[in-house]
Length: 179
Image 1 (cartoon, rainbow, N blue to C red):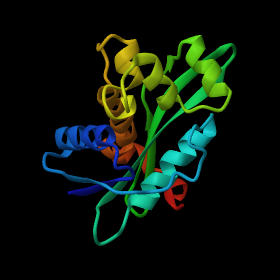
Image 2 (image 1 turned 180 degrees about the vertical axis):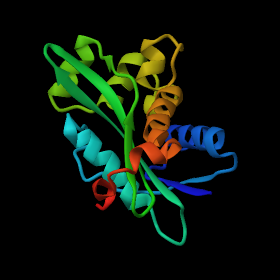
Image 3 (image 1 turned 135 degrees about the vertical axis):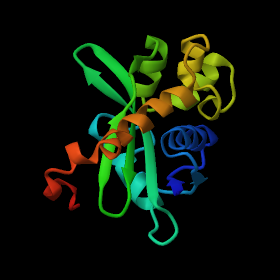
Image 4 (image 1 turned 90 degrees about the vertical axis):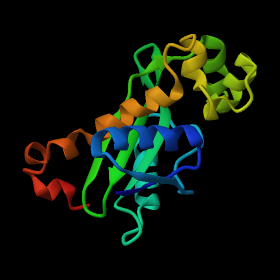
């Protein structure tokens, strides 16, 4: 199986490779550049759209069996703002989506992000770790290493694979997948 990840971020590529190999056995995973079509710091539904755009942009029939898009964004729920990562998987006809667990940023970080800065830049400065998003990520720093960005990303990839693991339960309404 050949899989394209709509990103060259090594954390995203490794997470997809880890999950696809667990689920399918052999998997050849390649990071490719794919545009999200959303702002660099997405909010709300922009996050899901960004993941979908990356998955569809990464997928090239005859070259890959599936395209995978991963996008993290901020979701406001009452007085809480959570970072949630979404994954979309596209195979040319079937689009599936899932997300990982969400977490809050410290108020200092959130204030800067709401003022227009990107989470990765702010967290790199706060943590003192250059390019933190390509390493353990903000979640690795904030959880004291108990959950890394790779592990968080794996959650969203696995959740997007759920319908594919149970196609008889999800493909009942085939008109939903004719996008």
